Amino acid sequence: MRKNAQQVEEIEETEIPMEDGQSKQEDEEEMIEIKIPVKSMKKPLLEDLPGVGAATAQKLQEAGFNDMMSIAVSSPGEMVDAIGVTEAIGRKIITAARSALDMGFESGDDLLKKRERVIKIPTGSAAFDKLVGGGFETGSITECFGEFGSGKTQLGHMLAVNVQKLDPTAVAVYIDTENTFRPERIKQLAEAQGMDATKVLANIKVARAYNSDHQMLLVEKVEDLIQKQGNNVKLVVVDSLTAHFRAEFIGRGTLAERQQKLNKHMHTMLKLADTCNLCVYVTNQVMSKPDVFFGDPTQAIGGHIVAHASTFRIYMRKGKKGSRVAKLIDSPHLEEGEANFFVETGGLRDVKL
Ligand code: ATP
Ligand code: MG
Image (cartoon, rainbow, N blue to C red; front, side, top):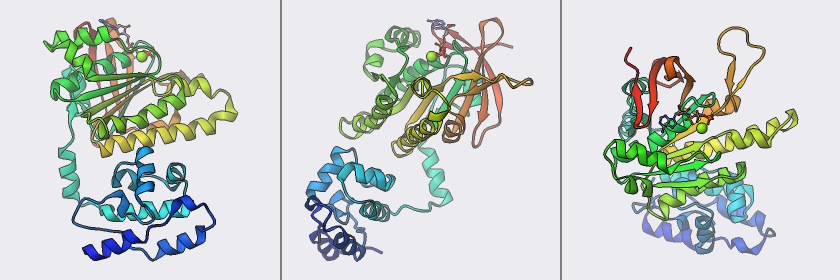
């Protein structure tokens, strides 16, 4: 259902003045009802959306909604916050954006093509790479959980270097919540591979997150790094995903709120991974479960919310003679299994069995 240029203009002319307050709300909703989402041959503009004029388009952009896709995958509540419209109008704007984008079902062969865009960031250990099907994938969230010292942070550093080995223009974003990012460690890892450490460090954007809200905001800002500053971000590390949430929401009464926030955070990251074809790597701690007598008495923080949103889940633990063991717990298309490796000054190295 393509619209011709004349129809496009008609729709643009019936712009709704958003700034006039809520008194016209009912009229506005009726006016929007008769509008048809715009689909044209040219790239759709935000102003093509019903009720969105230049001023509103600017507000949308200021709130980080730079293109149709970002609006199409948002929620009506986010529209309310961003441009101060009612939820009903927010919903209509989103519906129009979705329609303009021709979203909906994709055929299997299109999805296969999308899968071909996926980049796999190697870990440095052949066994670990094999476990995860060649490396850490873009378009997904990979979560590593495990006890202290199991190598989660080391892996984050390694990926930030290796993504650049794969693509010298790639930028890694490192959101550090525990002050464990070490540029000198990056230097060691880069030099061990014969890479220019200064250049590698320049392409890692590090931000220290001081609390859970700050952490969530930083993730939201990654889109600006890509859209506004033109960075080719291919990796986002959040180390640790859950430490702030765990420290801030203590006691049973706060659990629901914590999970709600974590859920929103995970979905922002999923959206980012998918729309920008980048790899999200998050680390997670474990807590001991005193009521478990058989098997491993540890459990990842964040429960089902984190487990569900993560495409790949890896459990890391310390192995024999200073080695580390990574176990693939959950993956949509790979066998479960284990990999043994050492963390060394130059990077990850396989254990020769
Ligand atoms: P936490 O839950 O406390 O954040 P973690 O899983 O992030 O723990 P890491 O910090 O990744 O743990 O692992 C720390 C371990 O990595 C050290 O105990 C050490 O064995 C190894 N390690 C760190 N730096 C080096 C280095 N430069 N050379 C060799 N091994 C190192
Ligand atoms: Mg760590």
